[in-house]
Image (cartoon, rainbow over all chains, first blue to last red; front, side, top):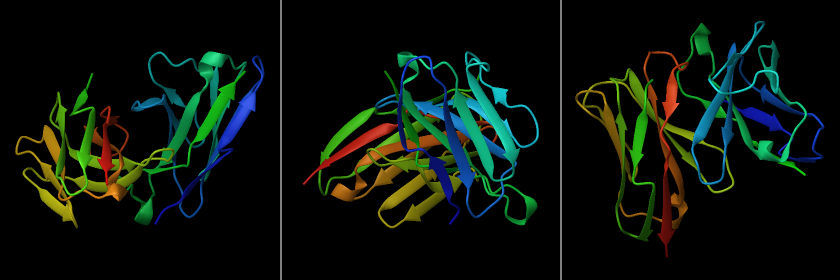
Length: 119
Length: 112
């Protein structure tokens, strides 16, 4: 099956610093990847849609200057949390849909998630 | 905007009991997907339903898509402790994945 790798799985940083999270599709290409945020025992909140070679599309209420997304290739998208604060502490997950045969199959494959703790 | 509601939010059953989670969309869906997230893990795709009235089975799991394509259910027969986790439905407004809206999930606990 399709594999999406996310790194780092856990990160602790000081308030005011920036943190970069990588999302890689290991065995398929994806023109689009998605970034979610999940609070404990809650659902997945879509933050933004990452488009290869173009600007990300952010959901309402998500600050694009705070959550920088770069999708430089068909297998890599990065999320940078800039000037992180304790309220940014959360579980961040990426996902992608394989493009078998040139078309999207529909189902999403998720990365393992990155747990960010801002002190 | 599109809303996907899922109930119950939480259910605790004894091993061997059945379990059902329901998903309702405010709008007609193109398809619906189900995911399972184990505690501490990430969501894993279970199945996609596309046709009106569709029923699919995966061993002890039965998935249904309503005739109006606005609701869906996941039923687990004779739960096992390995079924523990949160089950999410995700409604797709269009045929692609770009309009996928997740329900809040149902957390299932199974006691041995």
